[in-house]
Amino acid sequence: MNKAGRLSRSIEPTVKSRGHNQTFINPSVLQKVQLSSGVEYEWMQTLGEVEIHIPVPSGTRGRDINVVLEKKSLKVTLKQQEPLIDGDLLKEIKLEESTWTLENQSAIIIHLEKINKMEWWSSVIDGHPSIDTSKIQPENSKLGDLDAETRSMVEKMMFDQRQKELGKPTSDELKKQEILKKFQEQHPELDFSKAKIN
Image (cartoon, rainbow, N blue to C red; front, side, top):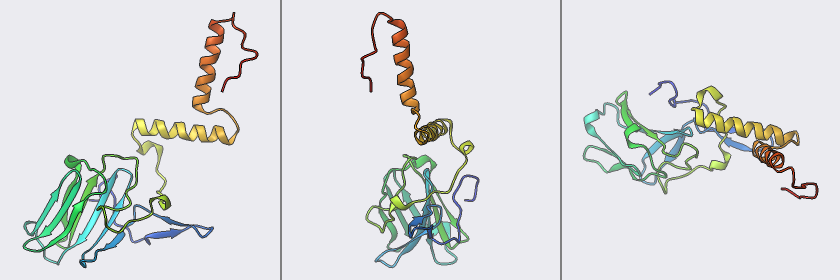
């Protein structure tokens, strides 16, 4: 599962502190979940994907595992046992790009591809313990890692932020000014000197 762009297991702490007594969550570090049934699993995410690690008894084989992935649900069962996980996913996934593997006959690794790649999940399964997504501090990424549409949107946001900091008009405001200027050039007979334009 450690292909480029995929999440990888990290041994960093789940929660990082950064000055001013604020706590941030690193979403690419495994978050541990303990269910009342005694089942434990760990999960992590990027904006585009979720990865779940479920420990299983050593020596478990693929044929002993039943993983049922649906667009909005997940069920993981070991042969002739109660489900390890069985519930509705917090958000919808792309079935055709979601997979599972058995790692070292001791852990099931489930890769879920998010449909909405612009939001953080507070939990994997609806009703399971959750994290506060407002405290997520994603790792920095390079603009070159983003697809063209996302990169364009991020560049626009960065430009607008710089403009605001300098007290200058944002890209939308510049567009409006340009449209107004063209309109004034096309209609010199109109007097705009007393017009209030927002």
